[in-house]
Figure 1 (cartoon, rainbow, N blue to C red):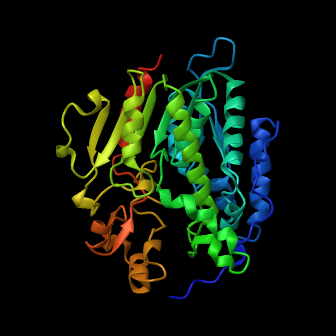
Figure 2 (figure 1 turned 90 degrees about the vertical axis):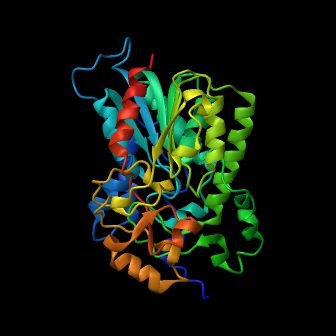
Amino acid sequence: MATPPLEARHRPSGLNSQFNGGRLAFADYVARNRDMLSRVHAGAADLEKIIDGNAPFELKPPAGFPAGQQKPYRRGVLLTHGLTGSPYSMRYLAAFFQQNGFRVMVVLLPGHGTQPGDLLEATWQEWAKTVAYGAYKLAEEVDDVYLAGYSIGGALSVYQSLRDSRVRGLFLFSPAIRITPKAAWANLHKLYSWLMPSAKWIHIFPDRDIYKYESFTKNAAAQMHALSRKLSALLQQHQLNIPVFTVASEDDITVKTSAILEFISRARHPSSKLVLYTTEPEKFPPSILAGKVELVNSTVPAQKILSSAHPAIVIPPEDTHYGAAGEYSNCVHYYPGEMEKYEACLRHPEQDLQGEITEKNLKAGILRRLMYNPNFAALKVSMQRFIDNLP
């Protein structure tokens, strides 16, 4: 099978491999990134839509919530998106926190939101600098700092919390506490990729999604693995005493759900909670993890949903891009080896099954990777209970 050709988007833009906030006020950091995005995406047909979805942003709580004791706001939350993704994926969580009286800030990780080639040069240390900056800016305005993150954003949130005593709690969504050990070898390409540039890539895909890269660099996998190793070492040395709300899917093929279960079992605060999506809730004993786990059946036959999936947790069904009637279909698991299935998946989404791209699910028929959470409304109820019990 021929490797798809590299294109201009597979090269670094030269504008987005390092943290670019410095000592800026958060509003100025947002403006700087919007300007950077406008330059990289100049000429795109949906330029404003692309900028709005990929740019960092901030929200202030509506009137009526109590102010902080010595700062403008009582609570604030910093949200961090996942690997290859963008702040677009955080917009519904951001709105939920805003409605619950939180000052909200959402960052853009270096290498993201522009073009896949920018992840050839980004490092996890630059991502961590971005989260540290956001936590610092949030702490200037709120009494109590909370961190929320999806996938690698969840891992970065845990990492920051272990180094920052101002953090009062965590909200983690499919957190990348641990990933496949194969990623440890991802940077071996540096020995020969100067001869063969495509060797720097795990996947070279069409990149149809304007809010998330489909193409995937080996460097990104290596950085994810390095962060997970660092995080595992820190978790062995430190106890996590703050309240933690976590959501995960048992069928997730991107992160190790067993590591998330181990993580939540060690969370010492009595309010800590895990919402676990599973196709077999009946197999878990009622006493699982001493009542810390809320089980949710992830199979929805009426919607042809076979299971939950890694990218689905934080998006509601009504989202116009990823939702039940959304404009984007995730079919890249068929590209380029099964082009007939790939094109059928794109053409007839209403006929397709949806779920995680497990071997079992792929055998069931044409499968779209599920990109939204049919239980998002119930998830907000669970989060609301958790918030109501915070100190």
